[in-house]
Image 1 (cartoon, rainbow, N blue to C red):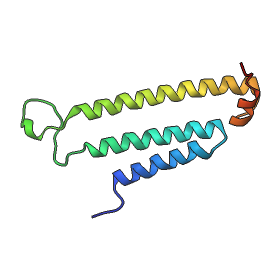
Image 2 (image 1 turned 90 degrees about the horizontal axis):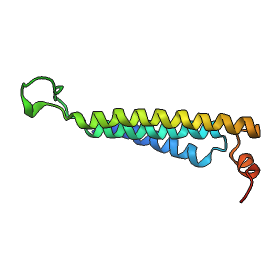
Image 3 (image 1 turned 135 degrees about the horizontal axis):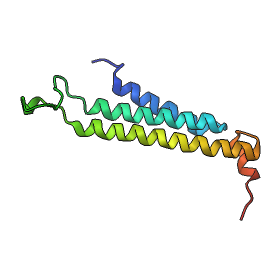
Image 4 (image 1 turned 180 degrees about the horizontal axis):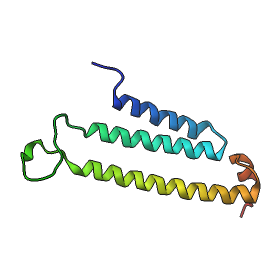
Length: 115
């Protein structure tokens, strides 16, 4: 049994991203950490659904050996959603940086007026 597998690497990536989200004060580093978590989760779900010896679901050959296309389609959707969330996050960051002049979470939170 191997210890270094794609599933273990994906879990390590997820927890590295979680550590970055919980400990970094810089907004850009937080956005990058969320992307690392996203990549780890996607890699984990792809490797869990991998079946050795399966063939692409093209044509009408042996149906029992065909790979299930649903997990791959869902992961492609997750990648697109992750890219969109990153783009919106960076847009909001640019707006905050122009307004407050800092990339530090604590400075931005202190400068936001309380209601």
